[in-house]
Image (cartoon, rainbow, N blue to C red; front, side, top):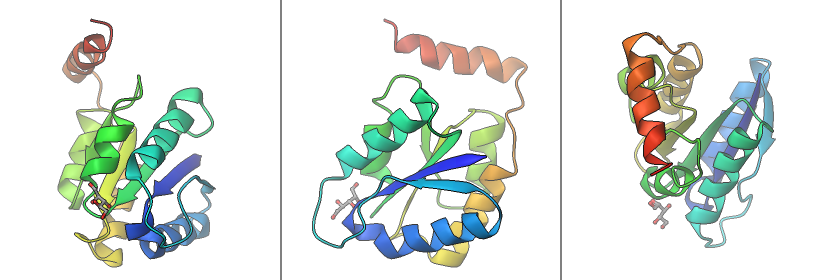
Length: 146
Ligand code: RB5
């Protein structure tokens, strides 16, 4: 499975840690984030992560900024993206089970690296449940066409 990962200047260290963690586990990782701490604009990176997922360059995406908020807002503007900010594993699990989240977001100024790894593990190890949740996810996606 291929994971695209993107970040702004707030989260270079955490991005690198998560990237190495994923690679150790055998995931292929596409890095579209900044690799320097020079101030930059998170919307560009949220969009890059979202586009990589929607275009099929990656199966799923992870987007990190200071809070996870700005980069999730940007990723969610890409048609087909369902980005969710998850600061603990329960929400990460539910974002897959019920919402079929395809871009996981969190904040480097909110979660430490060990918690981030638990969030990532829970998210990647959970699949969409479908059923009644499919209808609801379809309703969300239909909003994009109005
Ligand atoms: C950058 O200082 C910060 O605003 C950004 O990383 C993010 O938290 C925005 O939502």
